[in-house]
Structure formats: C-alpha cells, structure tokens
Image (cartoon, rainbow, N blue to C red; front, top):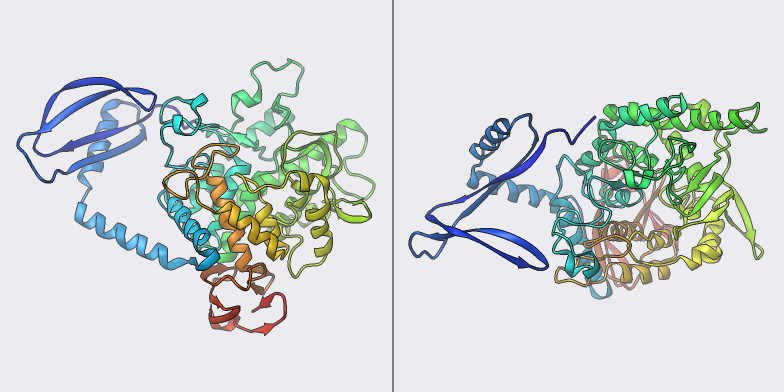
Length: 535
C-alpha cells in the first residue's frame, strides 16, 4: 500500500461577475502569502463564490483535472443543501445530552464537539486527534511553533493510536457508528504492510501495528530512529517511549466488534485484521520466549508478554495489565481463538500500604511518561466497574496507586474523568467533568488545547465525551445502569445507545428519573437500587 504515490490535491475557485486585477504578496498571522485579486464588474449587494476541492492519486495532471471537472458537474446547490440539512437533522435526532444549571456548559460543549466530529463524518481519512479539520494559524497556539496554517504538532500522515481511539470510542453511545468506518479502514488498508513487518523482521505471522503509524502502515521514520545502531532489532522503534508498544491496535479491534454488538454492523470485512492482530501476539511472544529458553510458555501454560510496554509509561514490562486486559477482552468478545484465550496470563496485582490494587505489570524497568495503564482494565477494557467483581480493587488503584495519584489531570488525553465515572465515583467524576468540558481558551468553546498535542485538541474533547456518557449510562452484560455517576442535583436529559440495538432516553429532574423510554420496549425491566438506578 502506498497512499502517497501521485497524490494530488487542490481545487477550483470561481464566481460570477468577477474581473482579475492582479497579484499581491504580504504576511498574515506570521505566514507569507500570495493573493490573486478580483473585483466585481459592477457594484453588487450579493456575490456567490464557489469552491470545489478534489484529492486523488492521479497518474497525470489531465486525469486529475478531468475528475475535478466531474466533481463540479455533480454539484446541485439547492439539492445538496437540502440533503445536507436533512443529514444534520437526522444526526441530532440520533442522540443528545442536554443539561441545565451546573451541567449546562459542559453538555453544551459536548454537543459542540460532537458537531466537530460530524463535520468529517465520511472522509477517507480518520479525524486526526491534533486538530481535525479545524487547525488555524499556529502562532495563536504556540509562537515557538509558528509555521504555516497547515501545521499541527505530531502532524503529517502520522496517526497516534492512543490519541485516535479517544475520538472514536464515544461514537458507539452517541449512535454515530457510521462515522467510525474511516478509522477502521485506516488499519484495514495497512494490513498487508503490517503483516510484512512480522514476516520480514521476525519470520512469523500476524500484523504488527506500531503505536505511531504513517498512513502506509510503517512507523513514523523519526520515531523509528534515523540514527539506529546496525545491531538493533529492525522490527523495533529505536525510541524510549514507543519500543515494544504494539497493543494499541487492539482497541480498534474491540471497537469493530462493538459496532456489531451495538448496531448489528456487518464487520466481516475486518475479521481478517482482528485475527491477524491476535495471531501476532500469540506468535511473537512465543518467538521471544523460544529465543530465551527451551519453552515458549511459562509453567502455567501462559504467554510471557516480555518485553512489553504499558502505554508509553512503564517500559520493558513483563505481563503488563493493560495488554493482558486487552487480549482477554478482545478474545472473549470475538468468541473464537479459544485456545489462545487459555494462554493469556492473569492480571497482576500488588499491595500498596495495605491495599490491594491492579499493578501496571508483573515487573517493569523504568517509567517514561505520565499515563496510568493500570486503570485500563477499568476503561477501555471494562474488566472492572460498576456492578462487576473487584470494584474495590479498581477503586483502590484509582485512589491509592502512587503514580495514578501523581499523574491525575483533566488535560488533553488524560482519562481520569472516564475512570472515575466507570468506578461510580460521582463526586470525582463531576469534578473532572467540569474541568474537562469547560470553555476552551478560544472563541469557539470546544477548541481545547494544546494540552500535550495541539489545538483544537480532539483527544481532549473525545475523552470528555466518553466521561460524560459513562456518568449517565453504563452496561454490564444485559444490565443497563442509569446515572451510575451523575450528581442527583444536576438536571439533565439524554438519549444514548447501548448494545443490542438499544436506545435509552431519560430525564433527571430534581433528583427523580422522569420520561424514561427504552427501545426496544422488552429491555425496560426496571428495579431500583439505591446506587445506581438500573434498568
């Protein structure tokens, strides 16, 4: 796959009653530009300017121009406008969260950010975490990185999985599964190259997707390392943050499986990718073990996930809890490869100051970043949570793990708001939601950032969306929990989606649930507990 060969982009701008008057050059917001200047032939009160854009891997300029012309001929302004309005109307009918009082601003900004995601609904390329379609003059974000308006930190064709996932997870509960295809296809199209990585570098099967990927499926060359020692493993990135981190693709495998559970989506196209990603972990860690000793499994018949990585934070791990939870959850949801499921080791625990909690890994050699992967078994992997066994252990991890406490924040891709909601910690979830989804620093309230990345910070918005959804609605098998982490004195109404083609609409007013509607009706079997309210 080579998405760059003959890649040509551009378009045509035109209007009626225009006369070309010359060119001028100047500088705007730190960027020099050249302008083609037009004026109207006669004074007018209204002028229509049309812009048509076209991107194509065209072998010749003539081919590109012809296809641009075809795009222009298909434009029917009145019809297109009507269709666009109808699409947006349907979009807003799918789901909503609308609060008042303390919840008014954060639910308004949730809605604004969902609008931003809708603007790139059906692109061939996923919405990028570091600005999406909405990057602007970079001098207004960071004067030290004042390049052209196309600039974004961690830019180019690079996609960073840990950030991208936060944009697409909330689309399940918002009912926007049709908008997830671009992200799934991003990996699906690169499958051949990812499988070649395993075959060429290590001689085994399975797709190896790195954490930071160029759009052709190989690591970003800067992160792969321009000054690599000749003896270093050719399959590894020569990078202290990214080495051995290849479990992040499993979140997209799980997302694909969840679209089938939520909306009954046809995922047959992606099954080979899911199979190949799982095969990689089975074969690669047997390969690693067989190079260290005679056996390729440990004494309990489990894979030894070493060397591994728990996010970019705990490095050179042995049996990272985030990787174990990922493999177990994907395998259980997939419902196949049961022999592999039996080889996945248990999640490791540790005791800190007399309290049992999830350990980042069985062992690790250094801490390199500020993520909290020991809480990934809570979210996204949902091994622990409201209504599940081991809730106290997971809550101990949130409150008392020294790194979890030290790394706690609402900025950027931080997920503390999500974990607090998933653990039913209402006050904490509310505190973080108010910080996460308050107005951003720019004129448009949902332009957050730069955080760890860039402005607008889409992984900030996505994690904010997820947290708010989890405060309102959670599931555990067939059980649906209403308001598991929502303050009873925050009035709110919502319409969200759940697995099994289920839609839940409810309103909380004055601490009481009113106007509850569940579709289909047969899922509305209510029994009220003190905490949480369940359907």
